[in-house]
Length: 293
Image 1 (tube, rainbow, N blue to C red):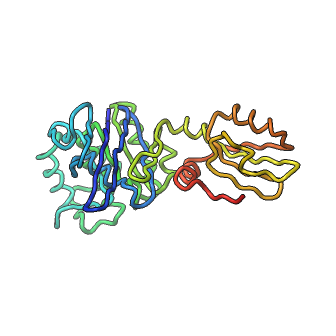
Image 2: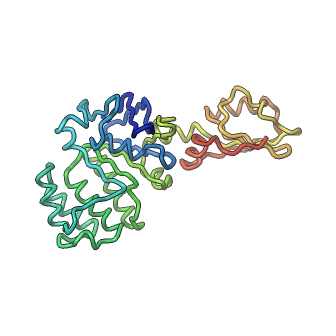
Image 3: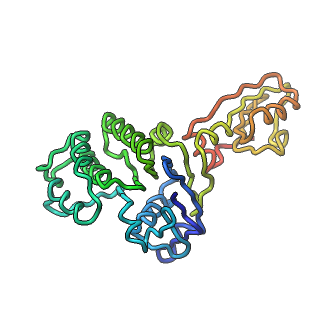
């Protein structure tokens, strides 16, 4: 289990994370989302032991990821800013990783083939997508218990993205791998993640089971015989309210049956209900959506 407890981190006067708490269960694929500058990369670097927490702690299976070398050996981190030593080849990087981490030769050969790479490839000459494949090759060849992927799909073409998703799902099912993955493509996360966290203002604004969270937020289009106002829906967890003439368009968090009961008590002429996708849920959680009363 991965756990961040009361974590804060600042760079000079800029506080990036503040008293952040997060728990991700073993064998989970967790989607980390937030606007640019929300602190996603900082959180992943803290989790990998690259940065030290100013306060609080981050642990993997109870071991501190900054102080405990055994914990750090079981963590693989693929940064959004990939770095490889000048002049390195895939073969030379293999030697580097074998000296630092538990390394699985069979897994290395399998992923080398899966990502269509060759040992003699000089990494500096590779495209951005091929460099990301290379980083994934070595991250997976160490058989981590925690895999941290920052903008994991950046530069990968559709076939490579699909291949990566299948690999991650198999590792989660077969080995209990825990994955924390950030991406600007919320659709990509929605396709693979079972849990999520929305990082905003240095804290986890919300996190939990992705399917349950989506089921708990719905869009309602309600037609009245009069002009509706926000006050009509007092007491509901209203994430967005828009009104045009006699039509109200709402996004409400809460049990659908209970919300429908409250709306029907207002005697509307018509009610339509639509689910929201992950991207819409993120927009409403972070910005509250657009309002036009």
